[in-house]
Image (cartoon, rainbow, N blue to C red; front, side):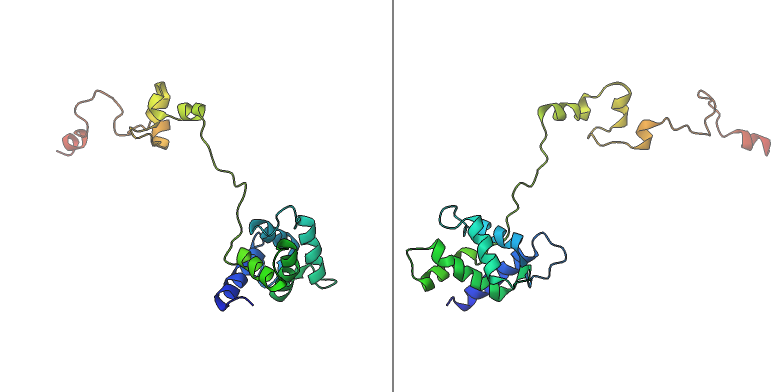
Length: 176
């Protein structure tokens, strides 16, 4: 049987794959989709001796007749079922040890996660240093937008006449 640390990391892997993709999962039970993902990500499925069909068949064997999920104990049984098939040249115990080492300490891999990529045209069109005309006034030197002050002409209500030199002197003259 596997060592104590290996059993703990095997159970940790089971829990991580059990909650993968399901916000309501507790980590106590694993569904068939996550079982197939575990086998694929941990390289239990090799495409020759162990296929995705074999993985699904083993899942159906170890789960209860009406159940849709497997527990940790059923998970270990499923690994025991797949071990001799994956490692044909080893004894049953050695094969189980080897398959546990494949799974232990692994996490689900996010494949196909899209990353934003800028293309040359996008770079050129979003470079604020090349803007001209009224659009140029909407950004400061660093390229950060000025917001509303860059879009509208904000009028100072105190300056009704643009060239008036004695602004603010009327009240002083009247009060004397």
